[in-house]
Amino acid sequence: AQKITQTQPGMFVQEKEAVTLDCTYDTSDPSYGLFWYKQPSSGEMIFLIYQGSYDQQNATEGRYSLNFQKARKSANLVISASQLGDSAMYFCAMREAPGWGSARQLTFGSGTQLTVLP
Amino acid sequence: GAGVSQSPRYKVAKRGQDVALRCDPISGHVSLFWYQQALGQGPEFLTYFQNEAQLDKSGLPSDRFFAERPEGSVSTLKIQRTQQEDSAVYLCASSLGRGPNQPQHFGDGTRLSIL
Picture 1 (cartoon, chains in turn brown, green):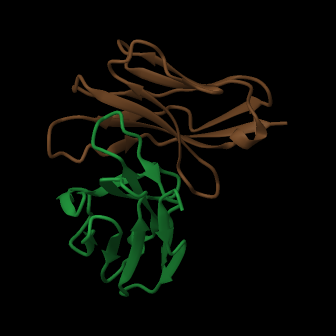
Picture 2 (cartoon, one colour; picture 1 turned 45 degrees about the vertical axis):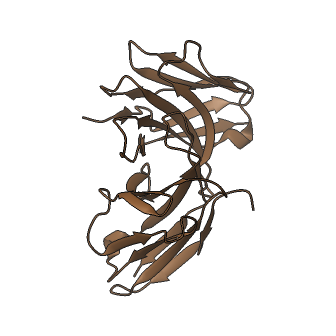
Picture 3 (tube, one colour; picture 1 turned 135 degrees about the vertical axis):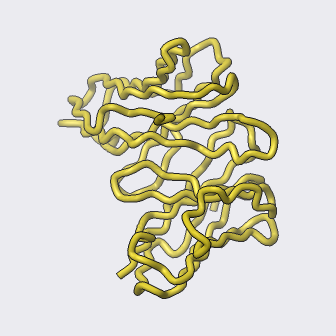
């Protein structure tokens, strides 16, 4: 089973409008972290926002917010007031904590290509 | 610099050649990860170092892939007898610790093309 599912291969949004990028995840660990990364066409992977499984409130970072619904195992990214520079690939990722000695690597979804229209 | 540095940025090699990819993590970051990203896909885990110890290499696709971090700082990913399916972007990431709340900071990657 996929651990991270991003069902939107591509999304379009008008400049200055808000957009939601979907992410669902699957884990049996009680402790985990959810991350969103942005990857422009130049290739670098830019960390945007983090949500911990025990966090009571949804994470926010500037124009980015994470709509965390634990019971539904979803962690959608909301970008408010879209800008042309937001056009990029967006990846949802999870870091589990299965135990000491494990790598705790990030598991990524397949990504959503966001295009902001002028 | 303050970020993760990878070199070379681009590498073209003929099938069968050996290649070496370098990663210089953020100073003080204990954890170092290598990922492989195929075109149009998300990165996939290759291997993990905690300081100089390689604690997990379960993602390495074959014994042609080898990684080291001898002094707990700079890491090198080596691919021997390269094959066309090795063509991908290789990303290095570092984080301060191992906790699930620790974001990983990525380098710009090395785009490897095998002819």
